[in-house]
Amino acid sequence: MSTIDWAIFAAYILWIVWGGIRLRKKAGELEGYLLAGRSLPWWAVGLSVMATQLSAITMIGTTGQAYADGMQFLQFYFALPLAMIVLSVTLVPFFHKARVFTAYEYLEQRFDAKTRTLTSFLFLLSRAMSTGAVISAPAVVMSVVLGLSVTTTCLLIAVPTALFTMFGGVEAVAWTDVKQMVLIVFSLMAAVVALVMGLPEGVGLGDAMHLAGATGRLQVFDWNFSLSDRYTVWSGTIAAFFLFCSYFGTDQSQVQRYLSAKSVDEARTSLLVSAYWKIPLQALVLLVGVLTFVFYVFTRPPMLYNSVHEPAIRSSARAADYAATESRFAAAFDAQRAAALEMARQNEAGAIDGATSSAFVAATDAMRAARVDAATIVKDVSGDRAYNDVNYVFPRFVLTELPIGLVGVLIAAIMVAAMTASSAELAALSTATVIDFYRRWWKAGASDSELLFASRLAVGFWSVFAAVVAIYASELGSLIEVVNRFGSYFYGSILGVFVLAIGFPRSNAHGAFAGLFGGMAAVTYVATQTSVEFLWLNLVGVVAVCGVGVPVSMLTGGAPARRDTPA
Image (cartoon, rainbow, N blue to C red; front, side):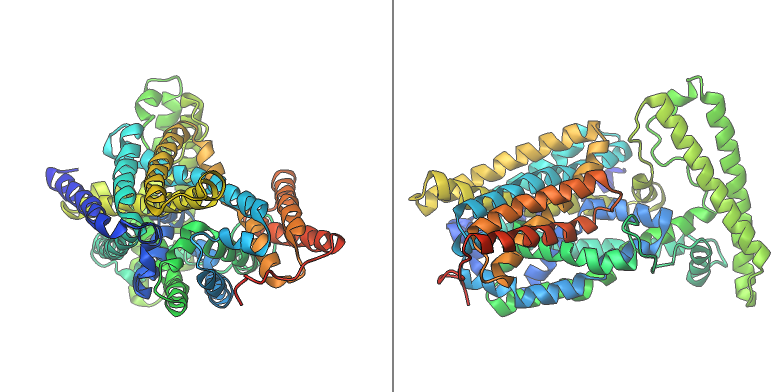
């Protein structure tokens, strides 16, 4: 990056940190620190919820996925609006009326302390690991792109995040999220403009869409029903519904957002912001990836976007194989570009010849095959079995193709996206640690000032934990994929306990506790012994918890809802 880009990047990071630290006076009380005094407006909470989801993994991973496969990932979000509506009329009013700090406090009101503690522990386990992934995944990519060590990029994300979260609390996190959402939308729109302007003369946006469509990248709907297919209409409307209900309804990193809203109505409205705007925003992210593919149809791309192992390969015994693969790749690119230009000319004339379209698709497939062969050579020479290329596509475009100034803005957007996502998780981890464990089991009579001090220490502890996980995860690349799926091992079972609490009035503490173990056992079996994709694990968890919890409750006498359960 240029000096100007580094200056923009540094200035934005400092502004974010200072913006959080200056709110420390408002975070001088426990409720102010953990829940922003329950005073945030609906639009700030809504943008904060969306920013928490839009991590750097989305900025670089989803664009890379769209570059390679197109728009099908959009199916993953089809159930989001319905999930938000369901949560708005169920869990949101329950939590608000209960006046709790964490979602898991409600489980003690409804069941007992051991159910609350186990559920909160499962949250801490899954969320702490995923926080490391939120930092690690972009840190690995940006270390290669920026020429820094992985440890340095991990610390560039983790240290500023810890500072403004530790001092400013949830209010600092929320207002930082608002700033970040503005920057992300601006950055994505700027990227779309730059990509379209980067097309050759005579090739417009309509031509670009025809080229993307010819390779299947504009296909959104996959109606095939198979539990082993990851993204289909069915997994996006059925399985993902349970994932979203659990994530937004029972995960403390999200519950903490709408608990900080001024009222139940404002909390409901904040969720509907995501219901209405998440899919269009996700479509914009995917469109950036698709347009990046079209841009590199006309601009010669590298054979591999992650070239960290290239010097070693060129001096290895596989150097000749690699050079031959490069020649195949170059020939395929020339054929692809020629066919694309002809398709654009024919589209302008009003009809695209089928032979030209077939030649374009064949050349695209040949380039993909060359990339696969090159990646195989990389893995053989380096021993890096987790070698990844597609996540480097968009950052590489940003650094090599965008003008000075805009590079700094985009890189800042990517890095701060990791910060905002992890800050929300750090705040939630801190709250659950202090409220569900420290105050509940170790220091029941602790003053607010003592709990406030413990909360800041907890943020620091989880920041260090996440940074360590991130650094080691970067060296064990396969762990990143494992952690990204980790939540689905827990989400369904945690949601199942809340379904028991609200949907089955005769369920009791024995049934809830047994159901949790039954849900985790069922999810573990399905995940390890079948080919069922991870989205469906959320449905498995809910069904298993209820399937065990209801009969156990009946066998142990059942119980009416507790009197202190919110009506």
